[in-house]
Image (tube, rainbow, N blue to C red; front, side, top):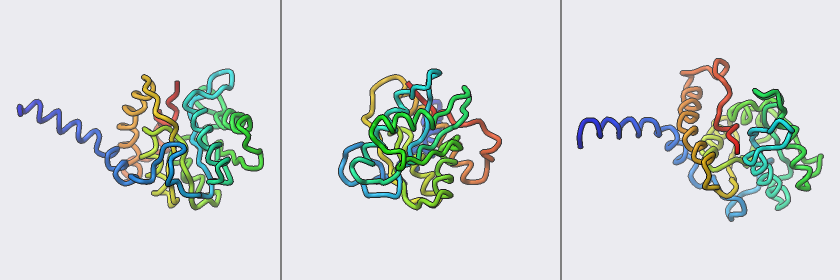
Length: 209
């Protein structure tokens, strides 16, 4: 193996290390929608994503709400925490779009808790804990869940993750790529090396199509 090849291999391993660590730590806690082995929880923590200018949820966001609604209708959770940016970078309300979608999917208003201060995954986890929940099922795309479940566990929550079917589309590949950087950021914040207050909101949680 040449020095260049060896160097590239080391760089690739270092880049992926936090994400791989989070995957190993959350192995067995992440499930596809409808799969067996999902335990009941206090709430589904539905994470925000992009909203279009007309108020419609992006495909990724709608899928997250659909997963949460399915968990509710199957009796696995009594509550959906709709956690996202109430005023995102485009000035749009993610939680309003999530609420409308959940209601359209038959989830009653009484089962919805809106968290418009969920500007990133870590904050959504901490907010769920502050709201008094001890166990959650995180609803997001598969690429996002290792970090999201890990952050929930770090916050003190008993966490699982459920994702919709993995779509073989460009935005999905982008999501997996972004998670490498987002996982490093999360690890450094948890280690106290970075201050999340000084950083822009993450891109991975707002990925869309």
